Amino acid sequence: MNLEKFEYVMKKMVIIGIVAVVMSSCGQSSLNKRGSESDISQTEQSDSLTFGQVVFTVEDFSENYVGKVYITDTTEVFSKGWVAIFEKKSGRQLIKVDAEALSFDLHDGKLLANIKEIPYGEQSVIMYEDYNFDGKNDFAIMDGQNSCYHGPSFKIFLATDNGFEYSKEFTRLAQEYCGMFDVDYDKKQISTMTKSGCYWHEYSIFIVENNKPKVIEIVIEDCELYPFCTDSIKRWDGTKMIETTETKIDLGGDAVDKIILNFQIDKSEKDIVLFISSGSLCYVVIDKNGLVEFSYPMERIYKNPDFTFETKKNTITFKNKDVIYSIYDETSKVGIEINIDGKIYYWVGNNETKEGTINDLLNAKPDNVIIE
Image 1 (cartoon, rainbow, N blue to C red):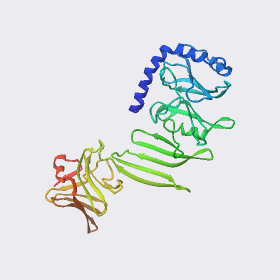
Image 2: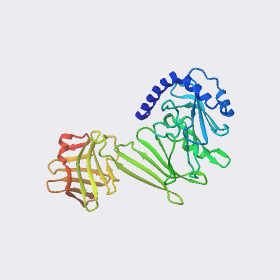
Image 3: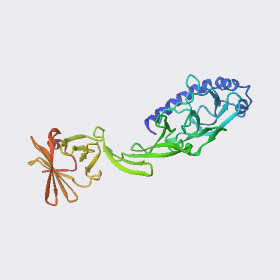
Image 4: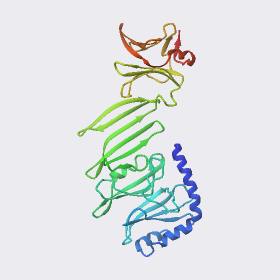
C-alpha cells in the first residue's frame, strides 16, 4: 500500500469511530425522512438494522433523484452493503447495486456525492456526471474495492430515454484501473491510470464513439531503471495505433548521487552528462528535446569496470561494441573523441556550458572506473 492510500485508510478509521457513536440516530433519521415513499421505505426496511448497521440518505446531487447507502458494519473500514437510486417524485427504485466492500467518508455527518479525488483520495459512493458526452448525467455506483490495490470500483449506468442502462464498456474503465476514471469535458475525453509498484504506470485516454469508450492513447511509463524512465506510447492517428518509445532521465532525483561533468555540444544541441548513480559512473547523451539518445553502461548491474580515467591526459574512456569514446576535459576545451574502426570524429563541446570537472572522480571513486 502506498503512503497516500495508507494515510487515507487511517483517516477513514477515525471516521468509523465517530459513526459507531452516532449511527443509531443517523440511521433512524435517514429511514424515517422519506417514509411516505413506498419503494424507498420498503428498501430500507428490507434489512433489520442492528448495531453497526446504518442507511445513509444522499440527496445533494440532483433535483430528480435521491440515493440510499446501506452499510452492514460501520465499525469496519470496508463493509458489505448496497447502494440504491430512487426517483424523488415517485419514490420508485431505479438502480440497486450490492457490494462486498463499501468505503465511505462523512462530511458534517452526511454522505456526499460527486467527490472524486483521483487517484488515491476520497471517491464518493455515488457519482452523477455525464460520461458519454450526450448532455445527460449518468450514474457511477460503487460496487466494492475491485480496482488496483484494493481501490474503489464502480458500475456505470448511462441515461437513456427509458431510464438508466448498465454499460459494461464504461464499467470496465472503473474496474480495471485505479479507482474512478477522470472526465475532460472540454476535450470530451476520459482518462484512466493503473500501476504496478512505484516505478510502472499506465495512462490511457479514451473518446466516445457509438456510445462506447474507444482508446486513442496508451502511455506505459517504466522507471524500473530509475533515474531512466522509458515511455512506450501508442497513439491513434485516425486509422491505426502508432507505437513509439522514448526515454527520459531525472538528473535531479535521489537516484543521482553526483553530477561529475555536464556540457553541451553546440552543433547538435546535445547535452553530455557524466554522473554517479548507486556508486557507479554513467554517461548519457540528451537531445534538444530532453530525451535520452544514448546511455552507457547499457546494463545497470555492475559486472566489470566500464570506464578508464587517464589522469595525465584528463580523459575518461569507454568502449561500446567497436566504438571507443574518449571524453576530454581541459582548462580551455571540452568534448568527445569518437574512434570508429580507426576513423576519428570529434564532438566539440561549448566550454562556457561546462559544469563540473572529471577530476572530481578522484574523490568520488565510482566502483566501475579504473584510475590510471
